[in-house]
Image (cartoon, rainbow, N blue to C red; front, side):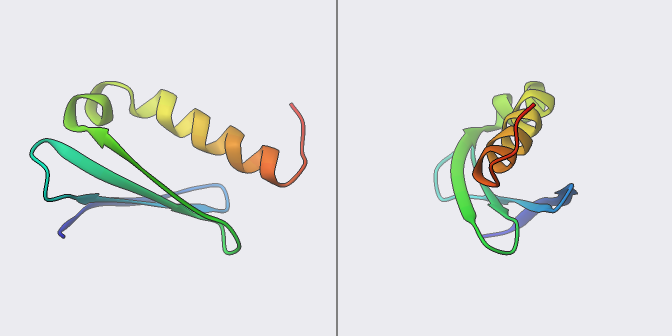
Length: 68
């Protein structure tokens, strides 16, 4: 599938790719040790990207045992 976007959130590499499903995107996250992926709609990616990035960052902090 075609890569739509790629960026870093701290030490987490985020890659957004298209899927076979119409209007769906796959979000892959990798911090060098842990890999996570999930699917979002085009609408969610466009309108809730900031919230999605906050949740990704928080999830990886929790994996490392850090607290707010």
